[in-house]
Image 1 (cartoon, rainbow, N blue to C red):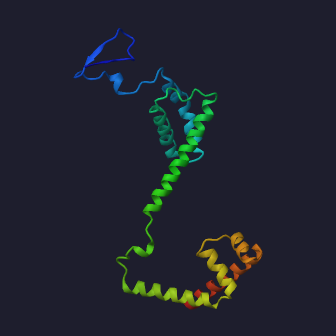
Image 2: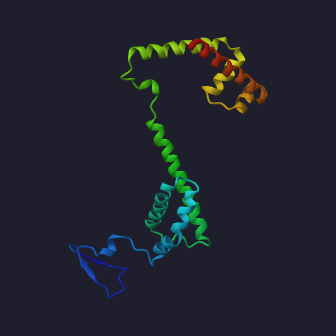
Image 3: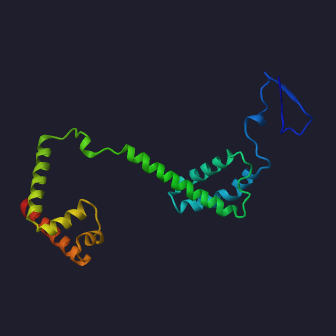
Length: 196
């Protein structure tokens, strides 16, 4: 059985079934060198553009990945568009977003709760002191007015902003700030009195 090589402009040649394929058949060749020209004319601009959105050391990788994806497309020059600069920039942004989503998923899978990690090498005295400190902090928190304690814990432990706490509690931001000042002052005074 013989195979005809369509891309060869020379007279028709046939290959026998056992003959190796010519190099041009192993790698898809795009008609013209549009990708090379596109890469040379847009790479530096795209790296600078990507640097505005991600860390400088990752920008060249994103641009390289963009051109690698363009190279494997089989539909010829995908940039037969009116504004190739805009197309490439949008493709770069899309790739950055895609990589960010992938990174978030990967980090979420790697997250380990601190309660699940065994503490090794801690001596009994340090562990006892840490437990005592937690008991003291719980006692100090119990001394606060309920609203002040709620606001302090919402900000320091739950990570809510003053604005978010104000919305949740129906208070003004200024009132939330006053409650936080009271709580911080109380905790600081009690810890310094207990320690000294």
